[in-house]
Length: 255
Image 1 (tube, rainbow, N blue to C red):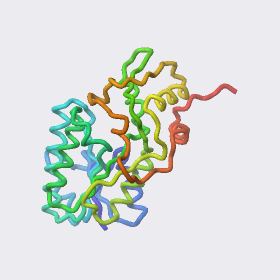
Image 2: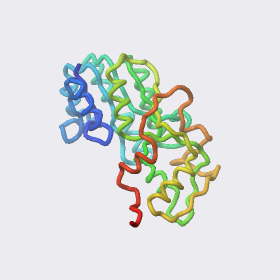
Image 3: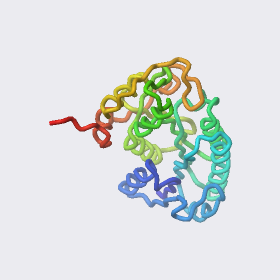
Image 4: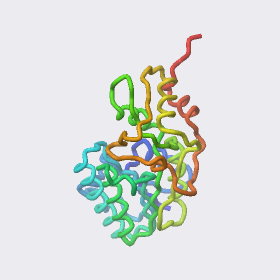
């Protein structure tokens, strides 16, 4: 089959591209560096030519409300329109577990809009809801402030490694469309504050972490289960300790 991977040079996209190539498929990588601009639509029609499956991993680096909403709406419309013209048989998009419960956050309003466009497009589709990546844990901690005590939401998380996300995305992209949402997560569920505390300890950071029921997650309030799968989910194999060891962030202990 022929796959178009949008965002195929990024953290997840490059790993998805590698797995699909190993599986023997023809791959087109779509990114600004390959001449494809999802915001203007430039290069999309040419990239879609003969494509069976689109894997949309495009993301916006800013959490500014208006900018992120505009990105997901504009890019989503351009990608889906081009896919429809090309007769694409399966549209796969990566989103986030709990998106529908996080409308207080501008970023997640953008993801909600993107998912609505996909469902209304008429294309066969699969939306993959992933839990937070381990690789985003430092950013989540940083969002709690820069003082000696960090206040994080009193909510559970079940982070997944980028390698496992790519494995799941590549596998699902080669399957028939679900015409719905599939959830993926890491192997271990824990309290966000406990995981952050463990991360700081193992990386030599002396800051303290407090679980605060009133603390916001990128502008949105959380229930204890907002960020974890609601039902059956595909589980990755890489746990926290293994990911931290592989990441190079683990503080070296004196001999």
